[in-house]
Length: 445
Image (cartoon, rainbow, N blue to C red; front, side, top):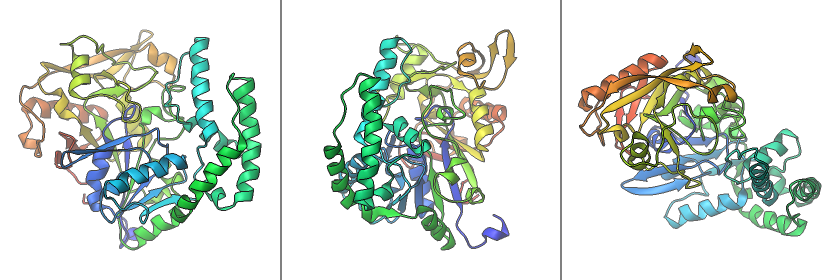
C-alpha cells in the first residue's frame, strides 16, 4: 500500500470473470471476515448469491453478502437499481432468520428505482422478441433493463425522490404516460394506473427513507477509520453491457472499474481486484457459448457438470448451460478488469472425470485467436481449441491445503494460471466458508 494510504483501510473488489454464477457470494462472505463494510455497486435483484454457512443455505439477491456477518456495514451504491418492494421483502426474510439488517444497511440516494411498469415492459419485450422470431435475450423479467434505460435517458425516479411526495408524483405521471404508450401501443400490453403505483411507493418510502445515505462519503469514512471495504460485483464480466456478448448481456457494467463509479469513490481506492472463476464454465439464458457441452444424456461430461455442480440459477431456477473452462474468454476478462489474482471455485465438481479440457483459443473463419472476440456473431462461429489433462479420482471436496490436492488437479490449475497470465490466489473446494485453499490473501498480502 502506498504511503498516501498509510493508516487507511484496504479495499478489495470481487468480480465474476465468466457469465456469472461463479460462486462470488461464498468468496465475498469468506473475505468479509477482514472487512468492515461490503458494497453492491451494480445490477439489481436479477443477481443471486447463495451462501452456505454451517450447512445452512441463504440466497441473497440485492442485499450485500456482508449482511451474514454481525457488525458489518452493508452499502447499496448508486450504480445499483433498486426495487423497493423486493428490497423490503428480502430484509424481512433475513430479519425473520434473526439477522439485524436495517441498522447497518445504507442505500445511496442516487439509486434508480424499479417500479411495476419496468417489470411489465421487461416481460412484454421478451414475449415480443420470442413471438417475432428474434430470439429472447434471456432477461430475468425483473425490470432491470428498463430501469437502467430511464437512468441513461435522465428521467429515472431515484431513491431520493421518495423523500418528496409531490416531486415523486409529478415525475411518476410523466414517466407512466411514456411507458404506458409503449406498453399498450407498441407491445400490446395493458396500461398501468397511476394511483396504485404511487400509493405503493409512498408506503414503502416510510421504511426506505431511514436507510438512505451518502454512500460515497460513508465508504470514505470507513477507510479513514482504518476499516477495509469489500466491493461485491454481480453477474459476470462477459455479461457486461459494454464488454460482454452484446446484446446477450445485462444492462449494467459488471467490471471492476465500475466499483468506483457505482459507489462514489475514486479508482485509486480499489487496491486489489479478485476475479472469481469456476473450474469449468456455465451460462444462464441466451447467447454464444463456445465450450458448451450437451447435458441431457447421463454419463456425459455436460450431464456430470450440471448434476454434480447443481447448476441452476439462484434467481430464476433455470438450468445453467455447462461446458469446459474457456481460457480464451478468461483472458478477455483478465484484460478488462486488471485482475490482481483469481479464486477458482467448484474444483470439486471435476472430481472423477477421466479427462479435463481447457479451451486455449478458437478457430474463427480459418484463423486462430487466443482471446474471445468482441462481436457476438463472430463468437458463434468460433470453434474451440482444447488442451487436455488427465483427471483425478481422489476427492478435492473440502480440501484446505494446496499440497493436499491431487497432483493432476494441481497441474491443471498451474496450466490455467500460466495460460491466462494471472496468479491463482485462492481455490474454493466446496460451498461452506471453510472449504477454501488460501495461497495469497487479498487483504493481508
